[in-house]
Image (cartoon, rainbow, N blue to C red; front, side, top):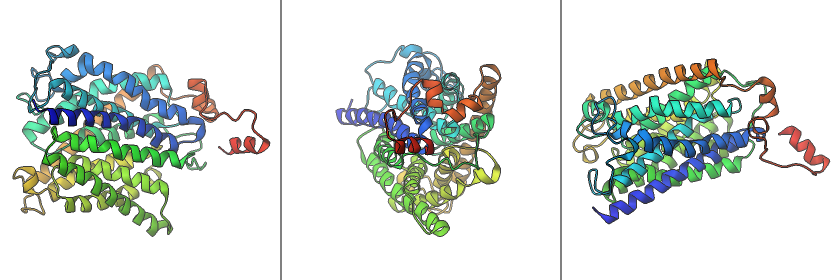
Length: 421
């Protein structure tokens, strides 16, 4: 055991946990004031449900050593056999259990942004349980398990995904698209403005996500070492570059740069660098970040052209950003960082590019198809969407019996403000 490695992964786990409250602020600020609590509760519910499922059967489905390349075994259900000894490397297995748990939590929470303003909270809770069991735990095994009976993407295909571009972001983005199609468009979509009600919340959330993401990416080195340092630097650099890329698109289109664009660009850069953080150089991360920021800024408009209501741009940022980061590994990865694996620009080898595309498409298809089926099943049984009247009234009051802001006793001006919100 190495106490330095152990301390760093414990700290990284706490940083990744912080990302989910950060996401709650990010998403909460982007919705209208009448649905902010519901939006934040969708993230917080993942904090409640996923740890219980992870202990009972999630960890063993993802990392059980008695499984196959498609699914981990069930020998460690209830964390049976997990002890303070090392799973591999220099950290105790319990530390690894805790670190990977945080990835499961944030992945589920990311999906919620696609269906903001219109989902029943009870249906969402059922969805979380089913989706993480049927979709996330198997995909986490494919991507993150490098053991003797490890996942097929990690050990057979040998695609590179340093910290979860496929398992987290493509997975969540494809699921968000599927659920947006199942639930349909919000009342007044494309007619009403539906502007973010609190941009400072959005910026605060983006900042918390960025801070936590250093644990997400640098912690994925599973040690306090040079690889963690590279991932740390790349996470900072690519994110900054993505903000530049996003704002550049805004200046070309509108002649102005927005705070919402800066926050969204930061998240796009964080998403894109996630799979590539340990594979590209810092200069490569600048290129990747600028491309991701610009492409994601353009991609958020696809919903208006294609007619799907992805409320908070989970598809445009997480699906597209995850695809960009995963595929560009095959173009920008350097042999010095990948242990000799070349890329198109560094070695002229297209082999890895093909592997990256296969991994991305496989996770996208698996997540989309199963999520659509899960969403349809829930919708046909208990109903996934609130009534039109409840949606117009506001989900906070209907689903949670409370509101984010108390305007009781305010002046007439305050009443007028409430009507505008």
